[in-house]
Image (tube, rainbow, N blue to C red; front, side, top):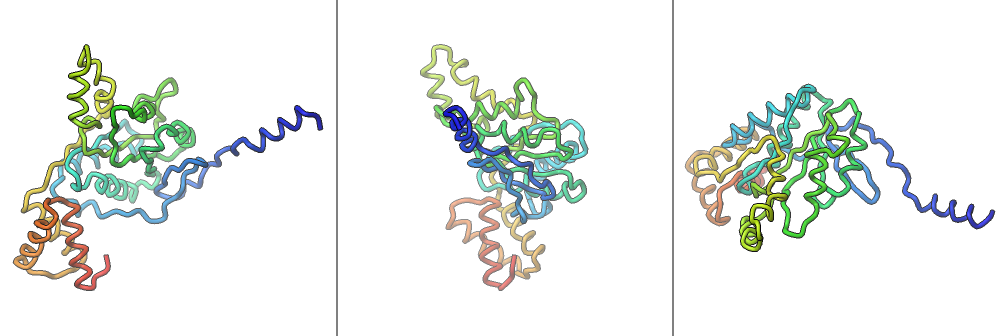
Length: 276
């Protein structure tokens, strides 16, 4: 074997093997890199969509958009933004579960923000498939020197190839414009043309066809969330006891939200010996 043959053989051994198409029988996947793969998820951590209280408008809008998409009709990319702990990611998973129960060809693929630069390789695996895919990116935000947002544009704008017709993006963020308000103000002050300094990043959120806002829960909504969990899991507790305990619980946390309501309910279920 001559030198060129040995070099060619060595390069072939070093080259990564082609990514095998996964079995798309599962309902959910997680995108991993090093090596690239779509790992199926046997059990998706989610609650029933009917248990999500206080976000009726967002729920109905996301359900309608998802049903359109699953049926092969036009649908929008969606940005779910707002108060922490108010069910943004829970709603995405719950809506997928509700719609995929009737249309099992609807799949969800979770993508970590750090893996966005590899997203074009993920799209190549999904492009042309008969299934429909929700790409789900949770807790999305960018700093001033973060270049990941450029990779996100490949999903939203699609480049020359265009975004596959069978893929839509659902992202959650605490920030409406995906970047901190103080960063926006700092760039405005430092820029010669303030609009140009922030336009590229701020306009990224404009590429989502639907914005769904989530706001902090009031006390009645907070208590209604917990009562719904108790009814769903068969835990009997009188209103006065629930109210006193739940208000004390939220006071120790310094906030009211769906997450805090679930944490109190988890403690209650444990004390009552109920599996959830």
